[in-house]
Length: 208
Image 1: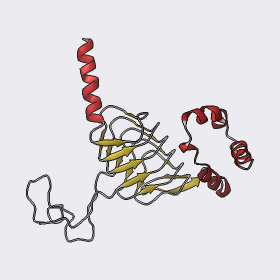
Image 2: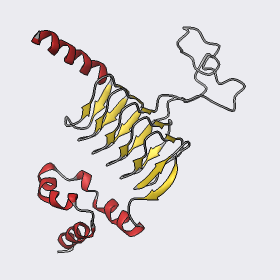
Image 3: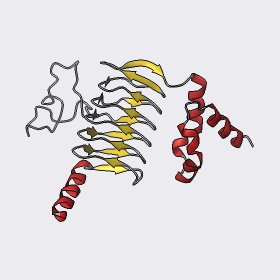
């Protein structure tokens, strides 16, 4: 029984982490999720039933279930949107195109500390900035600024997590690049809603 369970877990992990690249061993991809041609940063996780392709996922990202990221798009200004006419290789093992005419897998870039809610769709070629939040069910077809909260179909900016000056300070600090020892030391600052003391403390040390 234990061997059967272990085999199922190993098989699931193999399927869930198919053809990916990793920046750090500390990441998690949960069951029935397919990740291909993508890079995942440390302490980022992808919840079940998600499809991730041709994507760069930074550090400390939280991705909910049933999310589709970078899984291909189609041209809308050609006569036909069918890949039979622009893709040299497709599911039919036949094509009218002798070469590639459209990049339908433009890379998605998800920077650091991004939270993507359940049931979201992220279009190919989109860049999601540091600290951004994507509300559940959003369809993201355009770039998302740093620390923006977006939602809706198509997604639009609802508000920003912090003020302009605070956002710039956080982008300068880039705490997500700190090593684990430093993050552990500064952890008490990360559980307070007032983040100004954190910024002040970092600047004090940097200016010493």
